[in-house]
Amino acid sequence: MFTKNRKLSYSLAMNEALHQIMSIDESVFIIGQGVKSPWYVGNTVQGLLEKFGPERVIDTPVSENALTGVAVGTALVGMRPVVVHPRMDFMMFAMDPIINEAANWHYMTGGRASVPVVIRGIINRGGEQAAQHSQAIHALFAHIPGLKVVLPATPYDAKGLMVASIRDDNPVIYIDDRWLYPVEGEVPEDLYEVPLGKGICRVEGSDLTIVATSYMVLESLKVSETLLEEGISVEVIDLRTIKPLDEELVLESVKKTGRLVIADGGWKSYGTSSEISAMIAEKAFEYLKSPILRVTLPDCPAPASSVLENEYYPKSKNIISVVKRLFQKDYREGLKYGQKSKVFRLPSTV
Image 1 (tube, one colour):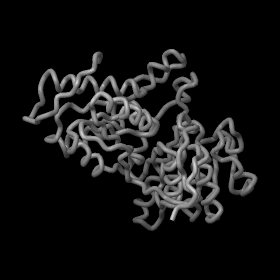
Image 2 (cartoon, rainbow, N blue to C red):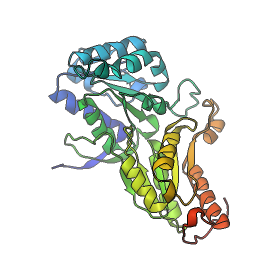
Image 3 (cartoon, rainbow, N blue to C red):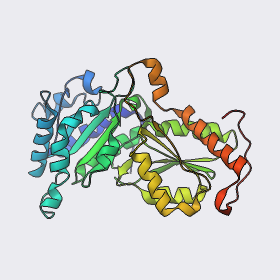
Image 4 (spheres, rainbow, N blue to C red):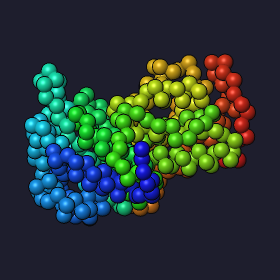
């Protein structure tokens, strides 16, 4: 039974998860760059060094490959490390221990060994940080067999998914977005888990499904409220985990609404939105009343200019524009495959 639900920020929800699980499990430790500095990781690890000491909160030199390799090695002998990469972009230096080692050991040993490591990558969108400091490469890791990939969008999930990731015997890529750090929500004081591989329906609707990840979930919730006033009922699905993907939840929603918009904070080509589109085309094509549309980053590196950033990063207004275009297409051309639809009041502009 959960007790004392209270408001907590996204970043402090992660912090609480680490405090609680490190208190009951001595095999859990943190290793990474800047884990002693709020400049690197905000308040997500505050108080941990003072409470658990430098043996369990290890601030390392700048060597992503080495520190990740150390974590994988300790996981192989029974520890449960949490690796912190304060800028996800530089996880590229750690691809060998992540992909060639962590993802493969369980299979290469015939199940005799496991690698229970959490590799936390932080996305730093905006702030004129440009192409080498603000990339969202979650789809890259989801492509790799043997890795699980989670993207919490709420404080509740930030805590619960962190706990579940640490307790999982597989390597987990845990991705948090700095844009979400100040977001507050109800978080129980108790220690709890949010199951990996299970999404959640945030808002029920009947006319359109929006499947979203990370900060785009919150943008999609704004869209749902706005479009309801215009007579369009939007269902919002928060994937929470993109590997494994909760196909059943997405399929059920699309079969009900017949329309799908995917809102993802990564690039469009060969990304998360592409995988979901392909899955729907393979398993629910006959239910579609309209084309699948996607709202993602454009296929180009992030700009440094704040003016260009405002155009580069998708927000609720971009989703609304796509949804209105979808319904106007329905109205003008009629629905394919003999499907019937309500007549919606068209927006004044598209």
